[in-house]
Amino acid sequence: MTTVSYVPPRPDARLPLPRINLFSDTQTKPTAAMREAMARAEVGDEQFGDDPTVWALCDRMCSLLGTEAALFLPSGTMANQIAIRVHCQPGDEILAHKTAHIVTSEHGGPWANAGAAVRGLSGERGIFSADVLRAALRPKSRYAPPQSLVSVEQTANIAGGTVWRPEELRAVVTVARAAGLATHMDGARLLNAAVALGVPAAEIARGFDSVWLDFSKGLGAPVGAVLCGSSSFIDEAWRWKQRMGGAMRQAGIIAAACLHALDHHVERLAQDHAHARLLAERLASIEGMAVQPPETNLVYFDPTDAGMGPEELAARLAVRGIRISVLGERCRAATHLDVTAEMVEEAAGEIRAILGR
Ligand SMILES: *Cc1c(COP(=O)(O)O)cnc(C)c1O
Image (cartoon, rainbow, N blue to C red):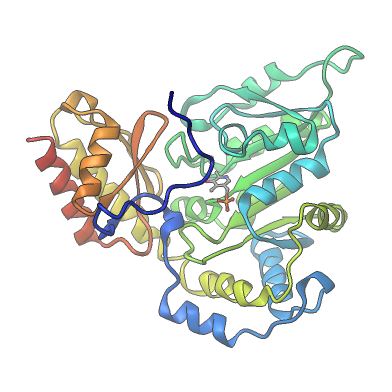
């Protein structure tokens, strides 16, 4: 019997260091300029409200997303968990797409931390329609679980890095509001969506009671997520941040990296999207390869009909210094600021060679 450990494995010393790292946009390393900005940061005790750089980041996020208040957190997972805890009571039901990160990847956090169950909705590309949401609403009753929250993921990760259009979001918010439910946006890659749509982030976030974005993905910061909402929502969120151990000290040193990312790494997300399209095009020209056309920086593909399973392809690439991930029984390649067009061409060439095409 094999037992799986919860401890992540250390890098396999037999494998070369990844020279082309398409595993995830979380693998971006802080640039020299970002490290300089961090070194220069003015800092203070964040837990006591003394860190000027954290306040500057929160203010900046409020203008970016059009919200009243903001909260700096160590991770996106904590942002989801705190938001859910504020919106929900034990016994409540949350409505989200069945592929959502809060369902698949937070170790049961909504159930454990808020005592709330997530009901997974269906819909193509990780997007559920207003009609699907309406059909999932339960009439208020002494028997049915109370429903308190609708959560959407922008972009929808496992579903393909897909983008909710503003009108799809509006329709869902309208139905949720009419039913008296709060609305939450897991905006881990919200700025990828904003850049892909050419629409301001505030327009995408409009109408949501809470929204956050992650700085440690394509934005290239080492740590950090910012949760935004009304002043009363953030007031409550601070309580849970303290309780969950997320209040920090000289956090300005990481907030400075996030501010640097907002100044220098947002418009360039368009390059990541172009690289993702280039990779998809190269892969689609391999006979038998099934490729989901990318909408942002994530390329999902299935090499099975080209003669090899996803796990085996990923293992063979790792030996050649190319790292991809396997998610939901498909291969995933993420483009980000450490990936160039040349690397994409090379990775596609290696995949073709491994498959003998
Ligand atoms: C990565 C991710 C998260 C969690 O963010 P962390 O900062 O890694 O905790 C949440 N939701 C989605 C959609 C993500 O891709």
